[in-house]
Image 1 (tube, each protein chain N blue to C red):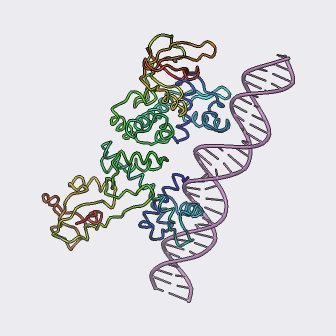
Image 2: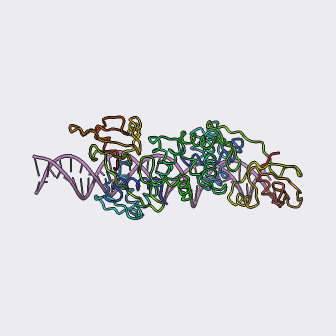
Image 3: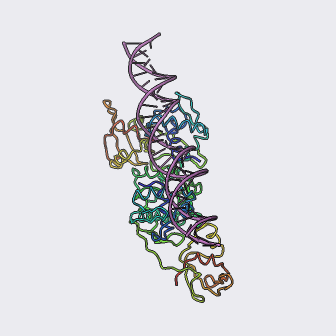
Length: 218
Length: 218
DNA sequence: CCATTTTTTTAGATCAATCTAAATTATTAT
DNA sequence: ATAATAATTTAGATTGATCTAAAAAAATGG
């Protein structure tokens, strides 16, 4: 059984490796874990000893198949709990992350399968992220950054990339939610900002940075 | 903020002291915490340093007002989660304890208040135990052991004292649930066992030990 | 291409939570 | 009342997760 900390590191490695592809560097890992490089080195050694990652000094860490599915099961729990908090307890999408960070470590297969059923087997969480299945497999969705989407063409917001409370609160304020219809009216060359219409109504300017954190499909 | 372990010790002290009344002995504490007396001694020192208990060497530990309300808030969370598991996720009453032992340590006032509301502000948990309020106050119910209840007089099962899975499964098997009507038909002097009727229908013998773990009112 | 900078690892310390073994205090039974 | 027994505490070690400081390896830029 994995400790809290081991689960958190695994999750961080999963995200930093873009889903288990790229090697993850010690300092980046230390950064996301808000700890020191020395501590990250210790932990990658532990995880390597448990065969959850392969690790070469000075080169980086890669998830093994087991490590990846373990990480995805933690992510499954996180996303199911977020869904619960929003759908059942009336949390807003900017309030759920911290609590889900705790709930994701509860150890009980039964619990999570019953929770999944109670929620009606949701496919995505409140931020539009896909929920992995019980065996640790995930269906990635082919979505594109709004910043790369062509102008004058309808698209639907499917997910947010950055889930920070400040970004989510900003989106709520301007009326952007999952499922909303967008249309790029104009692209501003100067700074990459976009003039968009929301639900064919309101027109607004958003920064390049905001656009890069919105994932859309046709 | 208290650690997991500190919260668990506080809870154990609360229960062992019968709600904060009697002093709790180190060995008893070690027993319920499934640890060694030396570890219990360490912990009571820690809790005393935090003014959650008063503690005298060789004599025992007593909860302070703060310690008692902290303990009751953990118990509140435990009982609300148990209620959630049974009412919403279709757990049976013998399955919930272990998971609630984990869930009770989630740190979020908002979460627990929203959960309380979602459940409709329940007064008791699935085992009939009263749920303390958000400030750490509890309403004790005046209930009596079935073994002390007079014969040939209707009573209602209000709670179970011992919540072990094996006892709870046994009760389910014979049809005893919270709210069920009992009547003592005969008391067997030899071993203190009782012949009872359940819901004015089925007649059955139960042991003295079982009767001592059923709490009833008129 | 080598000197400087950056990144990563190693070594050694600390803290919470645990343990075992030994010492101390309290209880009990003759 | 005191010897034996039981309960409790102290002392010292261990483990996981962290840290700082120093050493080592890799990357970079004249």
